[in-house]
Length: 150
Image (cartoon, rainbow, N blue to C red; front, side):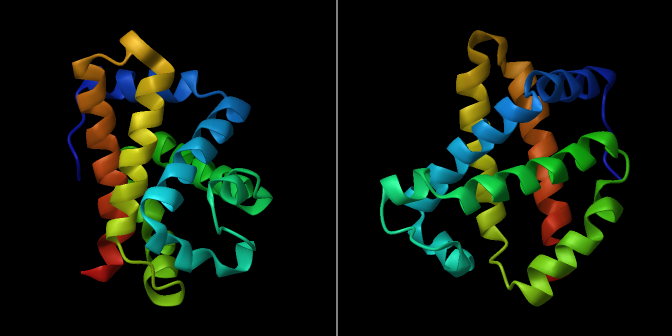
């Protein structure tokens, strides 16, 4: 179990509150785009998404955007269940490990991309303390997703 300080909880919940559903989905899609472009090997898990041949195809891909919405809902579950993220994510860990066979390092890559996009969105409000809390949260989410791999 992760020990969260009151300041960390507040920071994470404040960040999540600033990522309104529509804006958050757009931000996640924006984060997914560099992940798919900069780390093209991550595309192999999305062969059913159609063309991901270049940045324009990825940016306009409706399935990439829809996947962003699914992932944001998953992050919302983590925010709501901060004291039990591993149990909350156990089914997702099994799915990604046993059915989808996703390399768990891809979770980190996507988390890094999303953190950068959130930082750009929040600007100066993304202080060092807030960044530390957010990155701790993302690390816990990644560990929970990767739990089945261990």
